[in-house]
Length: 71
Image 1: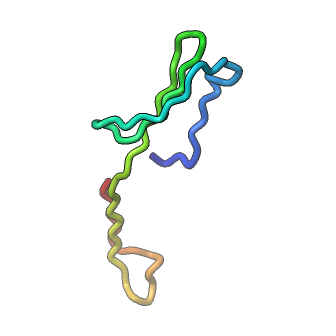
Image 2 (image 1 turned 60 degrees about the vertical axis):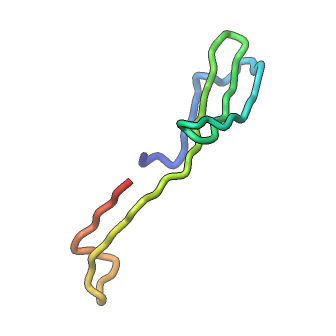
């Protein structure tokens, strides 16, 4: 994901009836917001590994010859 901020304008102004933090075995921690209109917003928060490999010349480390990213 390249976004640095997630926004949910669809929930602005809704009335919240429940806020829970759950431990989901599949998705990790989950924040659940339930609204009075019968909708809910679920936000799963999990730790993941990221490999960012760069092959570059010592004199120009900011300009990689090869750059691979594995999520």
